[in-house]
Image (cartoon, rainbow, N blue to C red; front, side, top):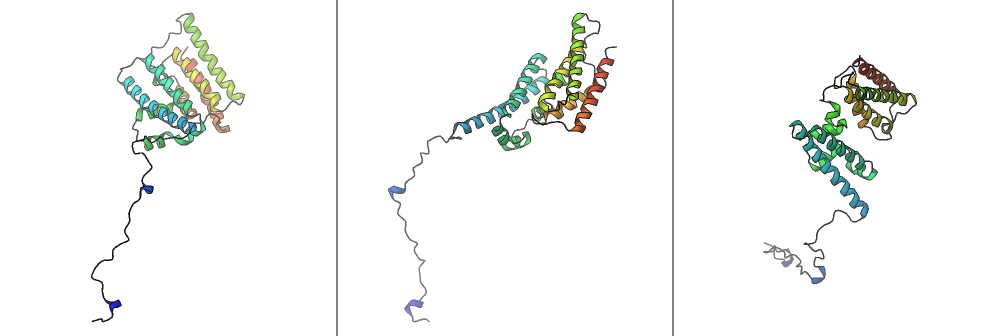
Length: 239
């Protein structure tokens, strides 16, 4: 048994230093005040653009479902889908928005969006009515109107081929021409002529490129060959 007072075991737990709050350290945050996502106009514009992209994706998925269920006319679908795709691309032309968006799959994961139909439509970049027209083919001998449509489609094919030969190989140069070409072709015939699928394949390829991005030398050569083959397939349906 220890006799020393300093070596005796304490029979109680030590009391921690007591703390008495003061009024000077009280919370200065108003818990009822709305927390803002942004503090500058640039941040506000960024969040508004991202919110718009979110709503476009959700709306586009609903439009695709409505089209599949035949709940919307082809005309209304084509117009609405085309407008939504343009708005989607327009929002992403801003560097800050594009950087925050990253890519579609990343955006979908971040905001927990399940929209397979909208994703596929965005990947292709054109309405389903342009990708797979369902109207009856216009007869070759259908008069002046039919002949005008044939001439217009042929001229667009030639313009597209000339553009490649002139070195116009960026997305923002080729994609609009290719969209106009397939739209003109669909006004003439809905027949899946030889190599028509290559037009759609190149539309998808170009759609996934950045606006200023260019085809490589090999890609440009393949593009020209495929478009020439598609043009020959188109002309074969007119004979």
